[in-house]
Length: 254
Image (cartoon, rainbow, N blue to C red; front, top):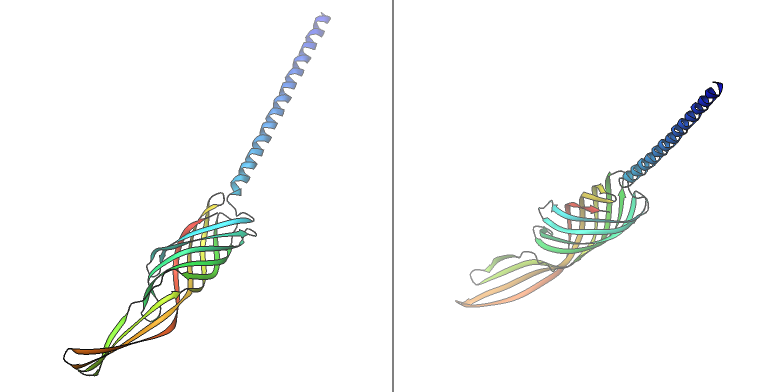
């Protein structure tokens, strides 16, 4: 009887040892699973946050389209800028664009149609390091005048010795050169995926164009009916006209 009791006790001890080993093994597996899940969650969170914040440094691009101006010009141009970000806030770059303005005032009431190509440098400052951030950009350079616009012509007549002598006058401007420009741009950049973002801004730009003012005088006389003679004289002088325009821009950045 004693021998049977010892055998039963040994079997119970063995069974308890096996159960404890299974429990410890299961606990170790569960702990490992929790560690792996936690590590995966941390990596996922870091990845999610990574594309929501500004890149600390590196190359950047900002491309925008001029949708409308305060004078009503629609889709008047575009520009693209490539540069380098020294930190999450400050970037320096250079850009090029194309612009087309119609009925743009020059001075007085004269207007012209201008096609320009701005070439410039810029300093761009991103205020926040979050997904949505205000942006301020200062740009400066030269706007090349691609076309040769001529303004509308003024013409009028004055009697000198009625009805035998009178003068015709013609006055207009022709622009042949662009000029230096500076602009201030204030907008907001919204990250869409990773570093790719949608950009909206309002910009104010001032520049100059130069050319020639043409002033014609036709001195007409009629000595006898139907016998009219005229002497034409042209006077020219250089003109410099300053331009300024507000633009609403939409574009993208990365």
